[in-house]
Image 1 (tube, one colour):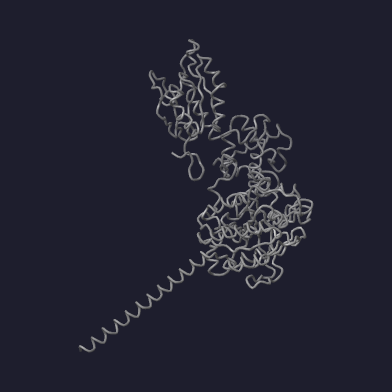
Image 2 (cartoon, one colour):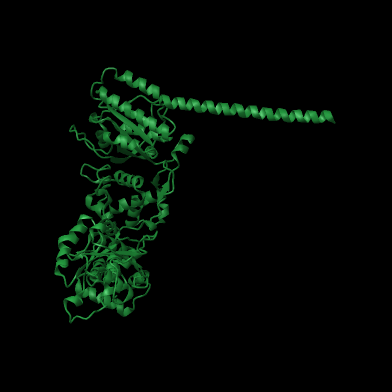
Length: 627
């Protein structure tokens, strides 16, 4: 039985009972289920189910008994890894079994990387002290607290060492406070507090109760209550107080009512991300979402300098689980000022990148920072790229470009120049996939008949650097090119080996595109244009591009800061998905064969039609002759 519903709500709790042999595991389970001490229990009980009405939370509990014998070790490990909670038993009349918890069982759980909460239970208390009567009172409590540790865990909310709420919990509660502070005056009035209570617990607070709550806060924390009502500081203090008093279910009820899961992230069931789409369709932000983000940028640009300082940027995500762009693949992925501030282009480009790579994560962050519209209005699915090719145009606003090339061909330098980073002559190999994104404004008309540029249009371009060692793994996936709008192949124009390797990569990608049906426009880029080209460079490149039906290589000198036009050319190629697609000899033969088959079918169809018409005419003539 799955332990969670589609909405992320737990439908059951699985508790595994472990410990040394003879410590009372089976007797404990049997006593909890039957409310009586059994005279005889088998060595290992079958799974025991406590019904949903057994405990107040209304969630059934399945208790799994285990054996500590070596023969059952594999099954024990499997059960521990499936556990929602673990109960470790020791026998009160056998001190060695208590020592074994710290010398064997707890280290074993750590070694197996068991993340479930652990409850330690002393059994056979009556055998240690004959005057101690057999008592069932605490037996059901064992599994109640095990269930509670699963349904209302302490770890995500509270730091036991520091005795404070954890940062992610504070962020979630701050968002909830702001959502409930309808007049945005920084405090919850009595009416707002009452509305919050009804929403979370389906019961209003009596006036005397509201007074009592505010009195407790006022007595315990300075600034927790103002003339306007309960402040954020007071709201956070209340929840810390609930947790300290063991009332974690209260705070969890609030968090779950506002859509949070056990990791204090928004649940998937409240994130209506379009998931049913073809591999060559992507997800983009809608104009409504982009307008919202522009407003957010202006709101937090407190000094009106057209960029966000780190402190201003952090303030935007203070109600999100964390700042999303401080880790890969988003860190250092967009344009910044020389002072390290984020420009509006960089801000929107980061969002475009996040939408492309992880639409669910993007939508969750949009909601957390205050997107108030219908969540379904924030994202849109693009048209299939195969349809774009047939229509010879695209409606996409964000283009995803794969950047291929051998080592030291200038891939990283190209990406750095795209987001305004200065050129560095120090070579650092790229071992992992890297992304950068920026806006590209088409400010001129291409000199190529393949790619007429629309003046003044602006698109977002995502460059994804493919490490040389990662090409084989990428191309092993049949659908690897489905989400790619354009691919570029760099080579060091002064190095013949670099050119040959780039050509091989181009042919590999072209073949994969022909085999999968996801062919993409491709461009060759002759990097390091400031260096002398290797002999026969122009002749070799001209021959290859002519054979494949591509444009001549684009010369680029990043060191000379001569790279801006190449990004317009890349966008232009992506905007015309039916052009610049390389054709290998095998691909050309396949295309000729298809044409021949289609022509033959057409000839057969026409011949059959003529035969049918002739037969009909003959029958009409014969009928007329007979009459």
